[in-house]
Image (cartoon, rainbow, N blue to C red; front, side, top):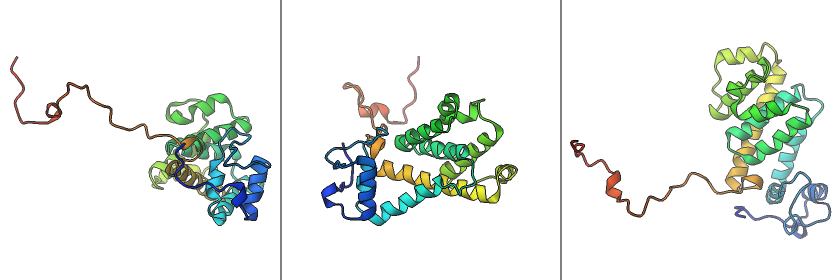
Length: 217
């Protein structure tokens, strides 16, 4: 385990929001000494965010915002955005958790499995494909959205729904980035992009452009 920030054990927790979340997720356990949540996650997102209770409280309010019955956006479309954001940002934690959320909304397994390659999948309807395309503009193009795509969104979503979807998707883009940067939960893993060692008989000069002409056959 290589979590990059200190975790807050229960004995050090005094803030009411921290204690409430510890009780909810871990019962009477110390989540640092005895990690693990009911959903199968280690739970260290919570113990690290507890370092700054106001930060944890702010994040929890964000969760309450997207789950509120006051939201107008279709929860399936919302979760497609959150799941795709996790995948695009390379966060196994966000992607994995929101695959489960899609399943909880009775989204077919075919669609859940196709989120990584939605562009060539035939299982999504026109609305779903449009919000997935919009998600990619938010998460990979930093908000650069073609007018034609935005016009398509407005044929089936109200302005309020578009704002909700945009806010929630960008919030989960942030969570994906943060969990990777801090190596929390399922994102506590080494970067796979590393140099692969060359054979022992390989000479570094063999890889350089020496300006020599190719040998004649």
